[in-house]
Image 1 (tube, rainbow, N blue to C red):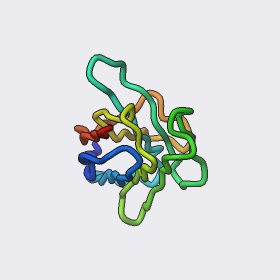
Image 2: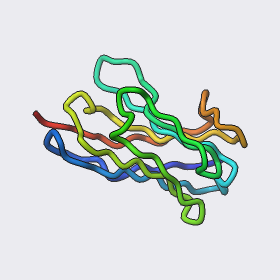
Image 3: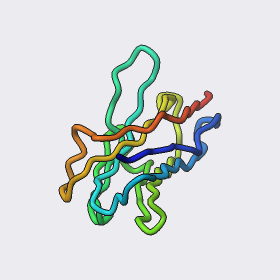
Image 4: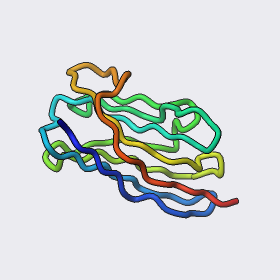
Length: 122
């Protein structure tokens, strides 16, 4: 059993930056792949980024590649999403997710956070 709590969301103007954090508790996530997903109103939930257990491998959706960076600090049981050059289309509820695996595959996640809202104004 793992609990994930996101933070760092908020309102930002286009071109600005936000850093999301996801704190894990309950069990170590040293062998957990971690990822971020987002869902806008009326839209399907979509993959944003993921990172393997060691942090050596990452993957990004094409829509955020070059702008977002995922990282993790296993000593702090925390994963981050640094979001730069934000666009209005990045507006969504962002969810942290985790999967117990030594692989890079996050799908399907075993655990979900409750989400943090990111709103990018134009």
